[in-house]
Structure formats: structure tokens, C-alpha cells
Amino acid sequence: MPDFQINPTAAALLGLLHEGPMTGGQLMAAAERRLGPYWSMTRSQVYRELPVLAEMGYVRLGKPGPRSSQPYAITASGKRAFGRWLTETPGRDALRNPVALRVAFGQQHSEDQLKTLYTTANQYHSEALTMAKEQAKEAKKNDDPYGAAALEFAVAYHKAALSWLKTVPSE
Image (cartoon, rainbow, N blue to C red; front, side, top):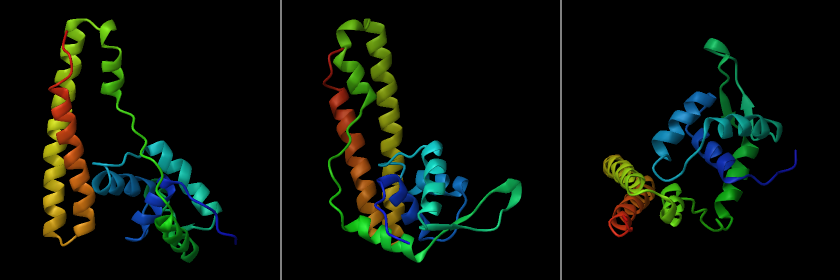
């Protein structure tokens, strides 16, 4: 079977499947736990990619489990495709911040709307920063320097967002 290029979401799924066979729900949980602080995946993305990866021969379906849950396992060609993906140039960041987008249209907001926007964003980034710090600490404790390094990116991102929020106009 010929090898095909994969997108970052498919690559993330293949990377997670290196840990062993998982159902779509288990992959979602693993993605949220391991990648969530710096990489988002939706349930629809996961369930859209899995059949495509199976069709490409990069994963194989296991025996259905409870409630028709379908485990997926990475194949040898899936491991090769993932390895190739790791060597590709990652491309540019996809920066999409919904708070920054709303701030760009701040003149159309009321003062109360801006206050609510900033309060909500501060709360989110504060909580996410705490969680990312804890996860990075745990990764270091578990002798996972690469996972810790990726999580330190999330820590820096949330710190930067909180710093930026202190500078945005409020009127």
C-alpha cells in the first residue's frame, strides 16, 4: 500500500497510538491529558481521522468492545508515516485567539462587555497556567523531558496571555 502524507491531527493520533490500542474515546482522553495544554483536537476531528487512517492502512481496527467501541492500533506503515511526519518542516503556527479577535473590535463593545471578556479570559488563563505547571512538574517527575518541554510552552503561553491582558484598553 502506498504511503500518504498525514495532517497534524492524524499525526497526533498515530503518536498517541504508539502507547497501545485505543478507542476513539480513549484517544480523546489521551489527547486532552497529554496534548491539551498546547494542542486542541475536537471529538469530530478524531472520529473523522480514524476511518481515513484505517483506509490508508496506518491503523487497524480491533474487535468491538462494550457499546460497540472500536479500538484502533497503529500498523507498521502507520509508524513509518508518523516517522516521516516527524521529519517534515512543521510550518507556521496557526494563531487564533478569540479574545484578541474581540479586543480588535473593542470599540463596538460596552465597558461591561469588555470587563466580562477580560475577567473570563483572566480566569481561564490563570486556571490553565496552574494546570500546565502541574502537568510539566509531573512530566519532569516521570522522567519525560520532551513532554515537560512541550508543557513549558503552554506555561509560557498562558503567562504571556495574562501579561497581555493587563495591557488591553478597558474603555
